[in-house]
Image 1: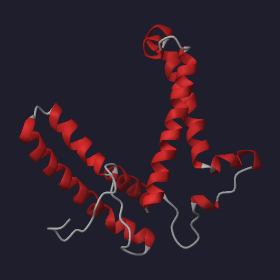
Image 2: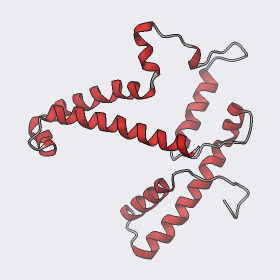
Image 3: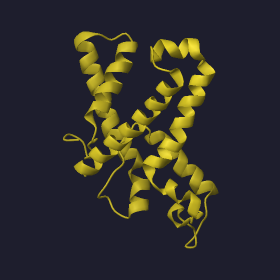
Image 4: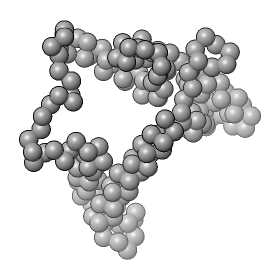
Length: 170
């Protein structure tokens, strides 16, 4: 960011480190070569991904005050293209925030409850398909279905901690 015209900085440096080293390691790189190549590739991604997404972010927010730095940027750009092709046009288009849920579904407006409603069944269904012999290797003496449930809840708590940290930083 210091040496280019793009002044974008990822908030999560550990993501760059993880991506650069894991992929470099599996590509066969080791030692100083892994550090140098991984660092260069990570820096390129950290600068390029926000720069590529900035025109769309500028259109959404109306300014350049914030950018989107994420390794899923290509997917986000694809989603933006799909919404441009198939989404509502003009001034009368509706936002997802305008949708009124029935009163018995209003609890889904809480992000963490929504994540829980998805992840708990996902973990439990997955462990049921995996079967007790395989799942018991991971759960040890604990019931494998209860283990899956607790892992799902731990995932939700992890999402909460992550988002709380980002909000605190912002």
